[in-house]
Amino acid sequence: MISNTDTPFIFKGALITKLILAEQGYTDIERQTRDIDANWIGTPPSMSELESAVNQALKTWNDKFHAESFRTYGDKKSAGLYIIENATNEKIIVMDIDMRPSCGSRVYYYGDTQIGNVK
Image (cartoon, rainbow, N blue to C red; front, top):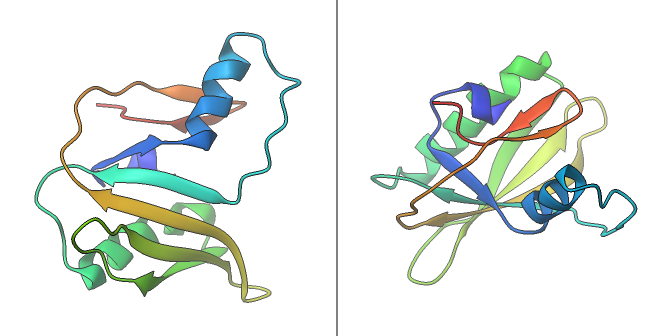
Protein backbone atom coordinates (compact mmCIF):
# COMPACT_ATOMS: atom_id res chain seq x y z
CA MET A 1 0.00 0.00 0.00
CA ILE A 2 1.88 3.11 1.18
CA SER A 3 5.25 1.39 0.73
CA ASN A 4 4.47 1.03 -2.99
CA THR A 5 4.10 4.77 -3.48
CA ASP A 6 6.56 7.64 -3.32
CA THR A 7 5.13 8.73 0.04
CA PRO A 8 8.18 9.30 2.29
CA PHE A 9 7.12 7.28 5.35
CA ILE A 10 9.20 5.18 7.69
CA PHE A 11 7.00 2.90 9.79
CA LYS A 12 7.88 2.31 13.44
CA GLY A 13 6.36 1.19 16.72
CA ALA A 14 4.40 -1.90 17.77
CA LEU A 15 3.36 -2.93 14.26
CA ILE A 16 6.97 -3.10 13.10
CA THR A 17 8.08 -4.76 16.35
CA LYS A 18 5.49 -7.48 15.79
CA LEU A 19 6.77 -8.02 12.22
CA ILE A 20 10.39 -8.21 13.42
CA LEU A 21 9.44 -10.80 16.06
CA ALA A 22 7.41 -12.81 13.51
CA GLU A 23 10.38 -12.76 11.13
CA GLN A 24 12.47 -14.33 13.92
CA GLY A 25 9.89 -17.06 14.54
CA TYR A 26 8.01 -15.50 17.46
CA THR A 27 4.58 -15.73 15.90
CA ASP A 28 2.60 -16.56 19.03
CA ILE A 29 3.18 -13.16 20.66
CA GLU A 30 -0.10 -11.28 20.65
CA ARG A 31 -0.33 -7.55 21.01
CA GLN A 32 -3.49 -5.79 20.04
CA THR A 33 -2.64 -2.56 18.30
CA ARG A 34 -5.02 -0.33 16.44
CA ASP A 35 -2.59 2.36 15.43
CA ILE A 36 0.20 2.75 12.93
CA ASP A 37 3.18 4.92 13.82
CA ALA A 38 5.34 6.52 11.16
CA ASN A 39 7.83 9.28 10.49
CA TRP A 40 7.54 11.58 7.48
CA ILE A 41 11.00 12.00 5.94
CA GLY A 42 11.97 15.30 4.39
CA THR A 43 10.14 18.61 4.24
CA PRO A 44 6.90 18.36 6.22
CA PRO A 45 3.78 18.67 4.06
CA SER A 46 0.70 20.70 4.90
CA MET A 47 -2.06 18.68 6.57
CA SER A 48 -4.08 18.65 3.34
CA GLU A 49 -1.02 17.38 1.41
CA LEU A 50 -0.45 14.70 4.04
CA GLU A 51 -4.08 13.57 3.94
CA SER A 52 -3.99 13.58 0.13
CA ALA A 53 -0.79 11.47 0.06
CA VAL A 54 -2.30 8.83 2.36
CA ASN A 55 -5.55 8.81 0.37
CA GLN A 56 -3.61 8.37 -2.87
CA ALA A 57 -1.86 5.33 -1.37
CA LEU A 58 -5.15 3.91 -0.10
CA LYS A 59 -6.58 3.98 -3.65
CA THR A 60 -4.45 0.92 -4.39
CA TRP A 61 -6.94 -1.01 -2.22
CA ASN A 62 -9.82 -0.42 -4.66
CA ASP A 63 -11.13 2.62 -2.78
CA LYS A 64 -12.19 0.52 0.22
CA PHE A 65 -10.63 3.01 2.66
CA HIS A 66 -9.94 6.70 3.00
CA ALA A 67 -8.02 8.89 5.44
CA GLU A 68 -9.24 11.91 7.38
CA SER A 69 -7.03 14.07 9.56
CA PHE A 70 -8.10 14.78 13.13
CA ARG A 71 -4.93 16.30 14.64
CA THR A 72 -2.53 18.82 13.13
CA TYR A 73 1.14 18.21 13.86
CA GLY A 74 3.16 20.74 15.79
CA ASP A 75 5.93 21.07 18.33
CA LYS A 76 6.23 17.61 19.95
CA LYS A 77 2.86 16.60 18.48
CA SER A 78 2.34 14.08 15.69
CA ALA A 79 -0.19 14.40 12.90
CA GLY A 80 -3.23 12.20 13.44
CA LEU A 81 -5.25 10.53 10.72
CA TYR A 82 -8.11 8.07 10.85
CA ILE A 83 -8.23 5.31 8.25
CA ILE A 84 -11.93 4.81 7.57
CA GLU A 85 -13.68 1.92 5.85
CA ASN A 86 -15.87 3.44 3.14
CA ALA A 87 -18.63 0.79 3.24
CA THR A 88 -19.32 1.24 6.96
CA ASN A 89 -17.76 4.67 7.65
CA GLU A 90 -16.03 2.95 10.61
CA LYS A 91 -12.72 4.33 11.88
CA ILE A 92 -10.62 1.18 11.78
CA ILE A 93 -7.07 2.47 12.30
CA VAL A 94 -5.42 5.54 13.79
CA MET A 95 -2.24 6.72 12.12
CA ASP A 96 0.25 8.88 14.06
CA ILE A 97 2.85 10.56 11.85
CA ASP A 98 5.84 12.42 13.28
CA MET A 99 7.54 15.13 11.27
CA ARG A 100 11.19 14.60 12.01
CA PRO A 101 14.22 13.28 10.22
CA SER A 102 14.89 9.56 10.39
CA CYS A 103 17.76 7.49 9.15
CA GLY A 104 17.86 3.85 8.26
CA SER A 105 15.02 1.67 7.06
CA ARG A 106 14.20 -1.92 6.19
CA VAL A 107 11.48 -3.83 4.37
CA TYR A 108 9.34 -6.27 6.40
CA TYR A 109 6.80 -8.77 5.15
CA TYR A 110 3.54 -9.97 6.63
CA GLY A 111 2.25 -12.62 4.26
CA ASP A 112 2.10 -10.91 0.87
CA THR A 113 2.09 -7.44 2.43
CA GLN A 114 5.30 -5.45 2.21
CA ILE A 115 5.95 -2.70 4.75
CA GLY A 116 8.93 -0.39 4.59
CA ASN A 117 11.14 1.47 2.19
CA VAL A 118 11.26 -0.25 -1.20
CA LYS A 119 13.73 2.11 -2.88
